Length: 202
Image (cartoon, rainbow, N blue to C red):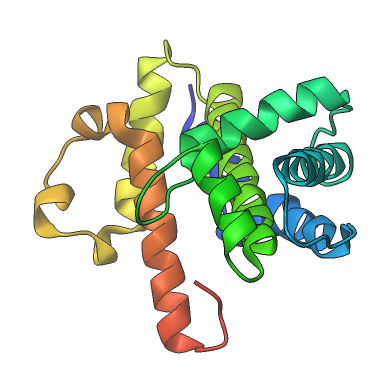
């Protein structure tokens, strides 16, 4: 494998995992869909209302805002909603789907808060899926020489920003941690840009 090919692979990985790219591809469409979603506000929020609104919300997001849209039946979307809340929702006293329902029914704007949480959770999951896809598509886990070349290019390109202990690592020592290293470099790059330009979002 040539350095030229390794450079091309690295540049494509950096493009596909860049924060601004992820924001345009995933975050913004989900935020837009969440903002546009309309539902009839009913007080108090019953369990039936909560199930209906959150399920329709997930269907709406999946159908129109994901990089790869999904058409879910009501039953599929309800199961997906329950899974999302069971895995990710937590308040001071409890966690899971029932905790989300209690917040939606007892708190002012509680239902809107739960919907915002669902949207954020979907975006987080889609980002993780996209990153796994990008690395799997571009880096063959069995091509050790390729991974070492990419690690060497990364180390040399960012040597001025790396701590001394990382600078002394050989490419072979860094090759197995490329996704984590690239993620760290993106975060460092974003912080530097934020310091140089306060209008740059974190």
